[in-house]
Structures are given as C-alpha cells and as structure tokens.
Amino acid sequence: MDVFEAIHTRQSVAKVKPDSVPRELIERALSAAVQAPNHYKVRPWRFVVLTGEAREKLGSVMAAALQEKHPDFPPEAFDKEKSKPLRSPVLIAVGVDKPSEAKVVEVENICASAAAVENLLLAVHAEGLGAKWRTGDPARDPKVKQFLGFEPDQYLIGFIYIGYPEFELEPRERPSFEDRTTWME
Ligand SMILES: Cc1cc2nc3c(=O)[nH]c(=O)nc-3n(C[C@H](O)[C@H](O)[C@H](O)COP(=O)(O)O)c2cc1C
Image 1 (cartoon, helix red, strand yellow):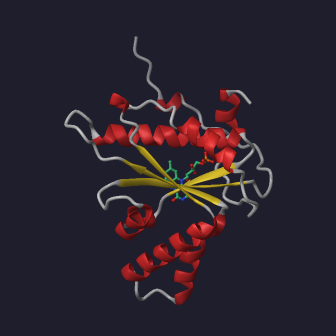
Image 2 (spheres, rainbow, N blue to C red; image 1 turned 120 degrees about the vertical axis):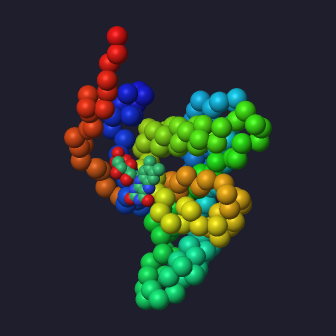
C-alpha cells in the first residue's frame, strides 16, 4: 500500500476483534510515528502502550474519575466507563512534553505529536489493523494522566485504540479540500 492509498482509505475503526496484536506490528507503527516532523528535534511525543490487564487498571481509574465528577450517575455509567479501554486489545495513550527550553513553543509540540499520531494511524492501517483516535473527559483528567505517568498540566492528546477490524468497512465518500483552500498567486 503506497502512502496515497493509505491516506485515502484510512477510516476510524470503532469495532475490533479481541485477538492480540503482535508486538512487532505495534513497534513498527511506533517507529513510523516518530518519523514525524518536530521543531528543534525535541521529539515531544510520549507513548504509553496498554495491553492485557493494564487496560483494566486504566478502566478503573477512568471510572473512579467519572464517579468523582458525577457521583449522582447510576452505577451502570461507571461500569460502562470501566469497560471502555477493553474495546481493543491495544491502546496507546499519547502525551506531549512540556517545552523544556524558552525557544520551544507548546503548541508546536502538540502539532508534532498529532503528526506522529497520524503516522501511527496510517502505519497500522497499512498493516491491516484498524484504529480509532479517542479523547473525551479521561484525556483531560489529572488522575488518568497520573496513572499514565503524565503531569497534570501535560497534554494527553489521545487514546489510540488498535486491533484487527471486526468487519471490513465500506469505502466512503472522502472529504474534499476545495472549500478549505485558497490559492494566492
Ligand atoms: C484530536 C481528536 C480527538 C478525537 N476524539 C474522538 C472521541 O473522543 N470519540 C470519537 O468517537 N472519535 C474521536 N475522534 C475521531 C474522529 O471523530 C474521526 O477521526 C472523524 O469522525 C473522522 O473519521 P475518520 O477517522 O474515519 O476519517 C477524534 C479525532 C481527533 C483528531
């Protein structure tokens, strides 16, 4: 699959099989991720790969965070939250380093990390895996960040859910660039 095909056929895959994914495939995708451009070569991305029981622990932290914010929610809401990380066999949380020097701009670190996520999404797609980038309240929760080893003021830009697609997705109409592009000569 060439790069254009990968870009034009990638879609978020919400439903994946529980089958485990070989570590080599995840390593290859991470290696692709870190080829992203990044200003001052700071490599601001941080990946936490969760498999097996680590996903259950994350689910417990997410459920506790939800309960703290919304103690009035019914118990089923916390059960549902707890089970979310089990939606895929592999979950990669992506954090962003805070600038370590005055010249480094935080938003540029976020941009670079987002570019790394796109590389990751394309790489897993090219490997026949499916992935979905998710955020939601857990991505902004200090306890969730702490569990993953991030500081409370560090950006956690996503949870990338990865696994073998449950079924083949229909090709869909692709977005166009025309209405978002101005040419200046
Ligand atoms: C920063 C970011 C956060 C996202 N968070 C969520 C999310 O919390 N839940 C979700 O269902 N999709 C989330 N998505 C996925 C988008 O909804 C999805 O990419 C979009 O619908 C386009 O679909 P596609 O990926 O199939 O092209 C997120 C995407 C990005 C870039």
